[in-house]
Length: 104
Image (tube, rainbow, N blue to C red; front, side, top):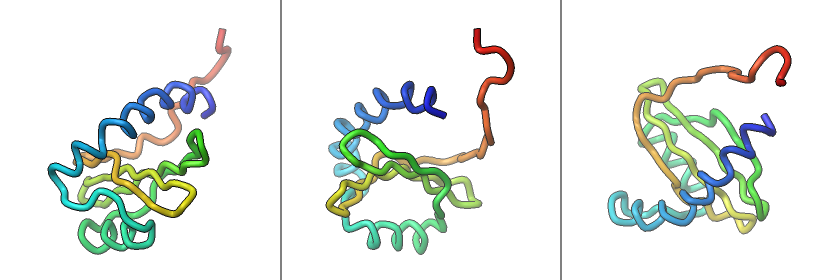
Protein backbone atom coordinates (compact mmCIF):
# COMPACT_ATOMS: atom_id res chain seq x y z
CA UNK A 1 0.00 0.00 0.00
CA UNK A 2 2.84 2.41 0.83
CA UNK A 3 4.41 1.61 -2.54
CA UNK A 4 1.12 2.48 -4.27
CA UNK A 5 0.92 5.79 -2.41
CA UNK A 6 4.48 6.66 -3.47
CA UNK A 7 3.55 6.06 -7.09
CA UNK A 8 0.23 7.91 -6.79
CA UNK A 9 1.63 11.06 -5.12
CA UNK A 10 2.88 12.75 -8.32
CA UNK A 11 -0.39 11.99 -10.10
CA UNK A 12 -2.45 13.35 -7.22
CA UNK A 13 -0.29 16.47 -7.06
CA UNK A 14 -0.80 17.08 -10.78
CA UNK A 15 -4.54 16.57 -10.43
CA UNK A 16 -4.72 19.00 -7.53
CA UNK A 17 -3.05 21.65 -9.68
CA UNK A 18 -4.88 21.06 -12.98
CA UNK A 19 -8.28 19.64 -12.07
CA UNK A 20 -9.92 22.57 -10.26
CA UNK A 21 -9.64 24.72 -13.39
CA UNK A 22 -10.97 21.97 -15.64
CA UNK A 23 -13.79 21.12 -13.25
CA UNK A 24 -14.80 24.74 -12.82
CA UNK A 25 -15.41 24.95 -16.55
CA UNK A 26 -17.65 21.89 -16.71
CA UNK A 27 -19.43 21.13 -13.46
CA UNK A 28 -20.37 24.33 -11.70
CA UNK A 29 -19.13 24.27 -8.11
CA UNK A 30 -16.03 22.04 -7.72
CA UNK A 31 -15.34 22.97 -4.06
CA UNK A 32 -17.65 23.12 -1.05
CA UNK A 33 -17.77 22.16 2.62
CA UNK A 34 -17.22 18.38 2.86
CA UNK A 35 -20.71 17.59 4.20
CA UNK A 36 -22.32 19.50 1.33
CA UNK A 37 -20.20 17.78 -1.31
CA UNK A 38 -20.86 14.30 0.14
CA UNK A 39 -24.60 14.98 0.26
CA UNK A 40 -24.49 15.95 -3.43
CA UNK A 41 -22.54 12.82 -4.38
CA UNK A 42 -25.01 10.60 -2.51
CA UNK A 43 -28.26 12.20 -3.68
CA UNK A 44 -27.36 13.16 -7.25
CA UNK A 45 -25.21 10.15 -8.16
CA UNK A 46 -25.74 7.48 -5.49
CA UNK A 47 -22.01 7.49 -4.77
CA UNK A 48 -20.67 6.16 -1.47
CA UNK A 49 -17.13 6.11 0.00
CA UNK A 50 -14.82 3.41 -1.40
CA UNK A 51 -11.22 4.41 -0.59
CA UNK A 52 -9.34 7.08 1.32
CA UNK A 53 -5.78 8.11 1.99
CA UNK A 54 -3.77 10.89 3.57
CA UNK A 55 -1.80 13.12 1.19
CA UNK A 56 0.94 15.63 1.93
CA UNK A 57 -0.13 18.67 3.91
CA UNK A 58 -2.84 16.79 5.79
CA UNK A 59 -5.17 16.57 2.80
CA UNK A 60 -7.51 13.56 2.72
CA UNK A 61 -8.12 12.07 -0.73
CA UNK A 62 -11.21 9.88 -1.16
CA UNK A 63 -12.85 7.88 -3.93
CA UNK A 64 -16.64 7.57 -4.10
CA UNK A 65 -18.52 5.25 -6.45
CA UNK A 66 -22.04 4.10 -7.25
CA UNK A 67 -23.44 0.76 -8.36
CA UNK A 68 -24.07 2.42 -11.73
CA UNK A 69 -20.29 2.70 -12.17
CA UNK A 70 -20.00 6.47 -11.75
CA UNK A 71 -17.11 7.60 -9.55
CA UNK A 72 -15.64 10.78 -8.09
CA UNK A 73 -12.32 11.57 -6.41
CA UNK A 74 -12.33 14.40 -3.89
CA UNK A 75 -9.61 16.02 -1.78
CA UNK A 76 -10.46 17.58 1.57
CA UNK A 77 -8.18 20.23 3.02
CA UNK A 78 -7.59 20.46 6.79
CA UNK A 79 -10.04 23.41 6.87
CA UNK A 80 -12.92 21.10 5.82
CA UNK A 81 -13.28 22.34 2.24
CA UNK A 82 -13.49 19.50 -0.29
CA UNK A 83 -12.80 19.77 -4.01
CA UNK A 84 -13.73 17.40 -6.81
CA UNK A 85 -10.52 16.20 -8.43
CA UNK A 86 -11.86 13.85 -11.09
CA UNK A 87 -14.97 11.90 -11.99
CA UNK A 88 -15.99 9.35 -14.56
CA UNK A 89 -17.73 6.10 -15.37
CA UNK A 90 -17.01 2.38 -15.20
CA UNK A 91 -15.66 2.20 -11.64
CA UNK A 92 -14.42 -1.29 -10.84
CA UNK A 93 -13.27 -2.50 -7.44
CA UNK A 94 -10.16 -4.51 -8.25
CA UNK A 95 -9.55 -5.61 -4.68
CA UNK A 96 -6.00 -5.97 -3.43
CA UNK A 97 -3.53 -5.86 -6.31
CA UNK A 98 -0.47 -6.05 -4.09
CA UNK A 99 2.32 -8.19 -5.50
CA UNK A 100 2.80 -11.57 -3.89
CA UNK A 101 5.99 -13.47 -3.28
CA UNK A 102 9.56 -12.21 -3.14
CA UNK A 103 9.73 -8.52 -4.19
CA UNK A 104 13.29 -8.95 -5.50
